[in-house]
Image (cartoon, rainbow over all chains, first blue to last red; front, side, top):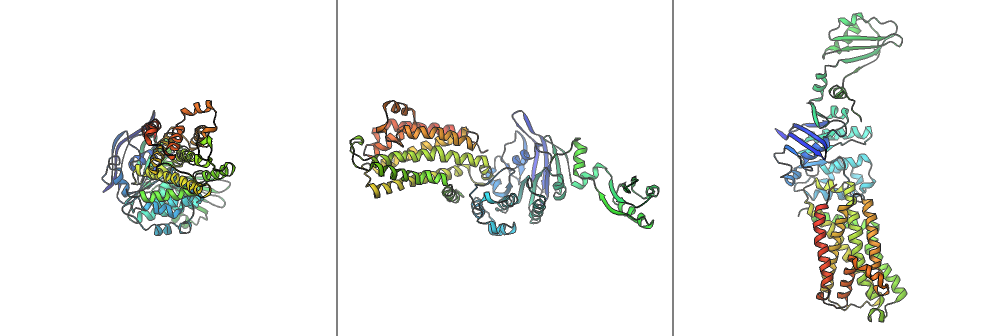
Length: 305
Length: 247
């Protein structure tokens, strides 16, 4: 069952086309991500789906509702974290939770929510005194206050340090484990890869690819790389007999070896061969192609963070 | 209506935490009443038709409080909320936009009223304030004046792009207006040519009507003033509906 269905969405601001024909569906219970550089049209799309912006053209159904016509009914049932928003500077965390709880028919226990998001100690702290990570957690708590079936997270981790970002990923996974659907946008390819069941790659107002991250990466057909070091002389010849190996590069001098290969069994075969031939190796690691490579391949450009 | 009560309560608390707004609406009028009262006293004077300086000042300062609420507090609050993204966040909830604005206007109106009441209490206790009008008439003018200045505040918030800009424009409008209209300085001591300039200032009409009914005049003696304020209210409402922005 789909909780979001978007077909042929168009949106422009003046002469600038923000969204040029986007169609997709989000299934119940998944974490669906939209990833792409700044200005690709992610926020416009998510805000049209939330009902905060009227689309120029196209159909949108969210939980069976039209976000423009049934906006209030829809907002009762969704949780929203906006990319750019704030609370009054002197509003305290607990007051914000109470206030937002008052807007909804159905509401969660806000103290329990704060507890789960690690904000209990901040209940009397004014919004302006919170750190970036704490603000984002408060916005997540506010997005969950009406026990929504569907949660929108727009650029949730932008501006957070790596540690807070990882903690936030755990929170997003937890939201999904409670049976909610998550629609998120990000310009961090790694985040999309780590979090999302399915990813739509957006560039210049269009979806250029949409699939599970691992399928997107696999569809690239780029080889995995196994990198290690050897002492002394290295003879690459026997490596070509290992199933899956496509190429071997050895740098004489520092003893660095890169073995390129395809298919899932490649790494197992390689390791078995190295052990049986008694090759001593150090610092072995694998390098997998990522969504970054997918984006580069599809658009010919590097995504800028 | 769900959420309106909680939102109003919250806005009330936030208003009191905003030192500048709370000071200028609640404390400042009382302080200058005490200051000028201590200088001039409140003895009946021919200049003020047999009333004292404090008697004249209370309705005039009331007009000043209304101008502070409508021209300074309201637009600065609205543009700050808009700039920070508070309005955006509220719009992503099921609360109706009318209720958000109702809470804002309700709280600022209540504060304006409290500002006036505080001044009346202090005036009565310290200077034996004289009041010879009808409370109902005073309330009518007070409410009409408040709401016409609030819509002016909405228009201002709709026109300017940033909170900083709102602050500057509000100050430029506010200061000449309170000094020239007779709100801050008794009109009786202003020269003729200043009084002519003051005719283009909307606050002048509020001061005139408020002082009139305060000392016993009937509403129908101030139909021009009432008409001007009603016109401000209606034009302001129409313009603010068209210029209102969430972000």
